[in-house]
Image 1: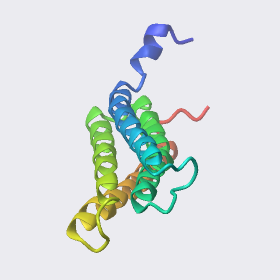
Image 2: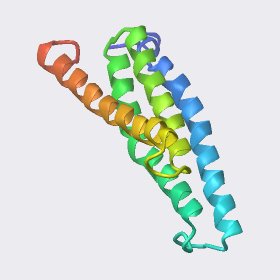
Image 3: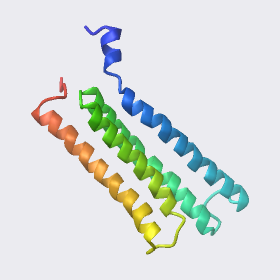
Image 4: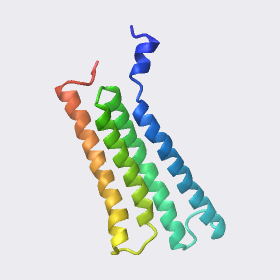
Length: 147
């Protein structure tokens, strides 16, 4: 039976630190939606405001991807993935989630749109796939306790 001290050594502290920063970003996205809802007097929906629509989607997109990716990275960290790998995965998630909302407020087909929105989503989808493949490989080839 594991002691509390042994369990504490396996907590995903690196992932947790990045999640704290990501939570602050999520709070900023939330406040932006609230501010724009008040400005546009929109209790529901976007009242036809493209800026509010972009804010709603940036907020929702964050909520759609960050929990799944962060959970997978935490599982990798708890299963013994290297600190460098965990830092790289979570730093990429942070960068992608910083880029994406910046691209939501510019015109499509611009350089900023391609770098920010398309780049942010490309990194996010890449992380989603990479984390899934890393977890499956650890399960198939050892590294995860499956009992």
